[in-house]
Length: 98
Image (cartoon, rainbow, N blue to C red; front, top):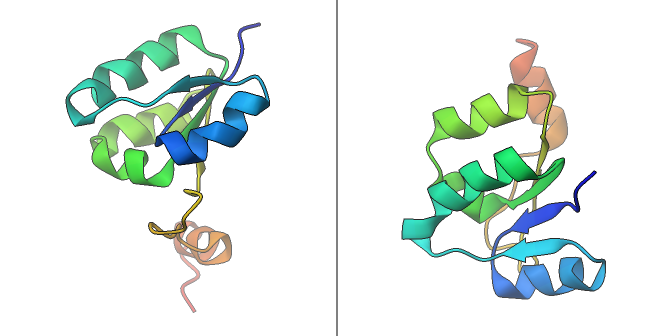
């Protein structure tokens, strides 16, 4: 089993680094190759929401559907890029818009 990987900004990465997670903070040009490499090497990918938005949506959806590695999109530490509310996401996916 390999160590989890965090892909995101340096500030958000600091806490993950302390927890023993491998940290990758690629620039925009390196992001897609780094994401693909993480999918090949890691069992768990923690992807910062801002970085997830910079990737092609189809790549992220495909990674979320895959059984391995698990992909979790996590909020950034500054909350500059809010995540959609989980409950509204579930309602939307089930066709139960409020």
